[in-house]
Length: 177
Image: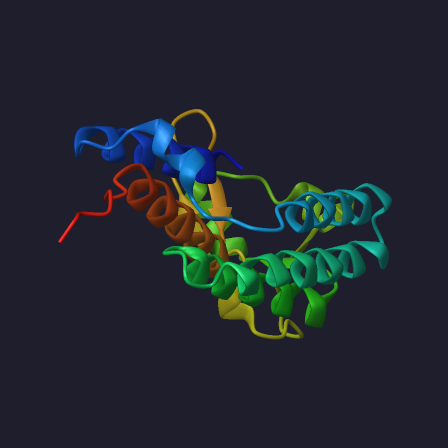
């Protein structure tokens, strides 16, 4: 997802512009990072298999990453990431795939042909039977060369990662009092 990458690059630039250093990110007290790796593998496996395994992989992924976020809940940004992942998991779990707004796709200039033909196992065209439609991919992002449609959950995840990166780069050293 190019949107998340653009937000990450902007966060790094902002962190550097405000006196932060990339090396400070290595000192973030994040624990149990393996949960994220296994969660990503579960989501990728479900997406690769498609069908009913996609929402299962998504839910397993969110539970594992949710565990990671719970363990690291005092670190800025993790709350936003958790809320975004929960929103995405909820809408995918209830619909079987991420519903995509036809109107938002049109405004972004993205074809819905794959959604109509059913060749995209991770997304479906939103319709009258869509549950929690506002949490689906409803936000057009007009990136040059690669426009996208993202969900409010995606925006929260990107904002949380940006907060984690910017504040992590600007970490303050303890002062002697």
